[in-house]
Length: 334
Ligand SMILES: NC(=O)c1ccc[n+]([C@@H]2O[C@H](COP(=O)([O-])OP(=O)(O)OC[C@H]3O[C@@H](n4cnc5c(N)ncnc54)[C@H](O)[C@@H]3O)[C@@H](O)[C@H]2O)c1
Image (tube, rainbow, N blue to C red):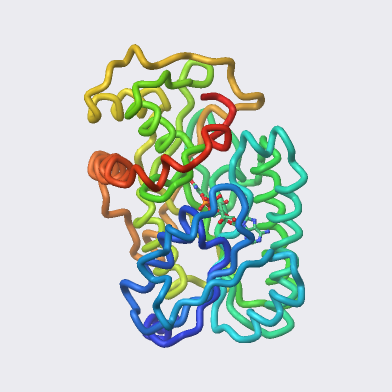
């Protein structure tokens, strides 16, 4: 077990910290360990926004570096200088991966390879952030850490490939790595190309809300701070070379989510508009989390109702954050 207190004055490299989960993770870490040093490396791709970290921007212990994880020289310099790397950087939107898969392979596969080479060269710890989408659609049951990958979209295939690379570097070179694999996150600072913020923003302006197909696709939803907490606990108690599933235990279909948001916001369900389904749209993802519960003692703290209310309030109270975002960059199904 790693001593969590090591983090209190550790040098931590977070990649991809300018948008959603990475920025929440940085704020979460500073909240827990105000004296740790965090370097945030981000390529400033879709949705990146320095305002997400304005609370810590002037903190001496925070350093922002603009750069791509594929930049070998930059990655080597940063990793050499750090104690641990949390790799969040990825192209993350399934729709964009269907329109143009190449950037997903560049960032998610080759970027992970570049990090892995530096990890083995300088013998550092890597916590690699992955997704439930690597297992593909499951009609029934839930995926354990042991079942075979079956990704459907180019995004999911790129994340599965990255996991295979991380595992191969553990088996072949003995690197100190752990993979975390989480279900759908929601919460503050998520770019509004994703379902929950998109629905909140459209509803707040009484715009039509597009729903793919029948809206019966099921995802498990986890509040982003529960995910951050799980990553930290995995860092502390996780076994080298292992992977851990993380879930919120809220399996809900899209139409139910949209109706819940409309109800909380006092908007009419008539705003819902069904649109042509996404190609290869997986029906259901589900993760079994017995391993993280047993080995690490982690479980989520937020109920879906509480997390959703906090999220809606955050977007309504931070209109300037999203009103400057171009409607075109929010995704094609508006
Ligand atoms: N959002 C979810 O529901 C979810 C669920 C499970 C796992 N994940 C994983 O968590 C991680 C973060 O997801 P997110 O939703 O915060 O994504 P996001 O798209 O909101 O943020 C990704 C960040 O990575 C940066 N980035 C992308 N490619 C880069 C590169 N080559 N070099 C440097 N920076 C780069 C982007 O600029 C952005 O700031 C991803 O690895 C994703 O696969 C996300």
